[in-house]
Length: 196
Image 1 (tube, helix red, strand yellow):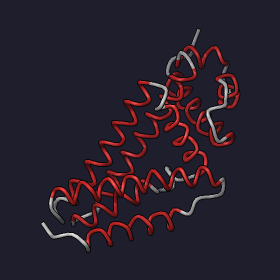
Image 2 (spheres, helix red, strand yellow; image 1 turned 180 degrees about the vertical axis):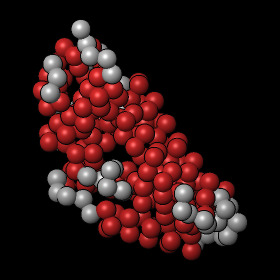
Image 3 (cartoon, one colour; image 1 turned 180 degrees about the horizontal axis):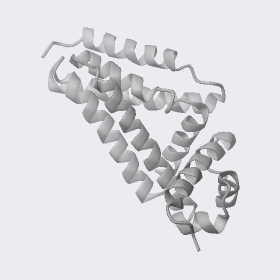
């Protein structure tokens, strides 16, 4: 008989193990059994909680998206100007919870899975819309609507692109450098457009 109250703890352990296993392999080339072993549970229990590997990976991405949302909200709490809000969003995307090697590898695996899985693609769209909306909301207070949309798209592409470069480079990521690159892009783009 399962112990009451253990399901959330075991689910979290499996999600953490999935992030670690994907990070170690650098791909989705892991099995539910390997993830379960790392989490200290049986593969049968992992299948019971998540059904299959895709559902476990999708649950892992939901977890990462929730962590990112919490980080964005935390950073935005101290931002008082539109430009400070943009910086807060950038910092949150490259915060320690999001930009360690295993998490970056998990994000890259998520991008790959989103090409094949409708549920993963839907989650990616939620992430992309949220990022674009957060950036656009502040940029529209600094420039006109069309320039704001273009800068938001470019900023989001830089964030995603830096994740991909980091994952493919196979070396530790430098969050400060990534943040500086995105900030420079935003500053250059804002200098070249009319104020709102």
